[in-house]
Length: 436
Image (cartoon, rainbow, N blue to C red):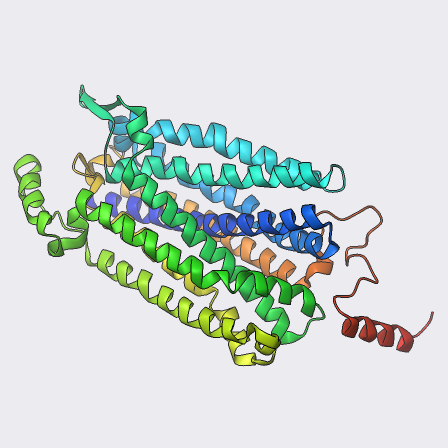
């Protein structure tokens, strides 16, 4: 049973982390897309339209492949964790069902209309669709965290015949644990989206790929916001810790004065055991904070060089901004590990132990095979995602297929340079090209 439990937890950790990598970028990018397209809708400037098309294509790639990891993750509730679904399925399943049937399907439908609505509908209607895509994405986070918040802080239920039954849906939706976590995760996603735009823009600016104005505009949008979003994430994280210390005090070990009394209560009810989380929880807590400090330092320093475009001449800073893309992912994943591992040994805090949530009769061989299959699948999706993101990010705005007008080549509309300098370079290149 111990082997099955370890393998089941490892599988869920792998799939949940893989899915979260997609979610963080999706939420962050769609927020910036709303800003970019709204500017285009108001001004009608082609520069804003090109920005929306380029970053929108990367968003669509990440969203499409991320769906697969979400499906894989949810399969496990029935396959590996039937003890959990039988015990709290009446409560836990409600927000997940709403997220799937309402938020996710609505988001996918609206996104499809937005993708195929380019050049087929007015700017105002097309922009409204993107706003709705972003709002449904945020609602997905809320409903998923509502389910997860119940696992960390059970509310709105009563025990009947050995099962938890939902009695107060309002209490479930207003769970302070879920609300604080939702706000914290959305802020962390904004950090991820900021650093993605910064990293891609810095790469093009450093290598002088011919789209200086385009990526300078993107850099000016994301770089000043990045440290503000990091600070917002930290502030919301502090708020979440305040609720967490009260609701799950054992997460912080003996640092929490309430923990010892709660452990004594657990021992009387469930018998002797280790009711403090493993050391990985403390490691994840530290790994969450250190990248955040580095992100603030790098972005604040770089923002100082935005004046008179000095940043373009600072190759080292541009290289650091590109490499710094890994930092929000490390911080986000570490924060999620801290939240989930810190709840151990509970699947539902104070009600159901993780060892009792595993599907009865599940053997080590079947569990290992499941881990290998699901783990390989999410790894392939991750590799495919980053390969496609890298491919289309390197192509630049002229390689965007999203929103291409009839008759426009794959390289974009010719004769629309980013700056007079590029126009001159284009003219020189054309003059020196051979004629066939």
